[in-house]
Length: 210
Image (tube, rainbow, N blue to C red; front, side):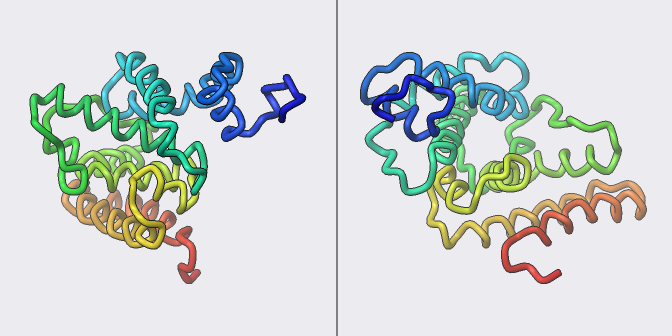
């Protein structure tokens, strides 16, 4: 890395080190452009469109928390962990709470939230509605693992939990979604179609029998 100026080819971790430790602004810009769309969508899914300040705050907080990043997982897991913390801070501000227990509180519990719908198919919409009704950290775990394709160690980094706990967290989260689908589905056919999506997710967990 030392002799190269081709930031495009650098790993996330190399870019982060150059940005945070050496004040390399080009490395910071490359890292920002690499992850800006995903972090923007992370906040938009939960808070609506006016989230640019939260995205900026997330990247700045990464630099401030540099000492916490020990390379145990990946920069991606670290970044989503910072985004999660910024999101929880925003919830305490928005809903005027002293704190939000992400292990038990859902977005639905807090009050009206933007529609978490990205697909017009009815069963897909139902699954996304169910996701809003499960604990926030369970929702984040499912999204990061199944939709953003983070690894188990990266999910552990983002949620600030031990790696052995990730699979159990995901299985419990899938169980919560199944329970919500049972309550939300208006017809047996819709319930069955929606549950197929959840079962497909469950089968993709490591060590799950086919």
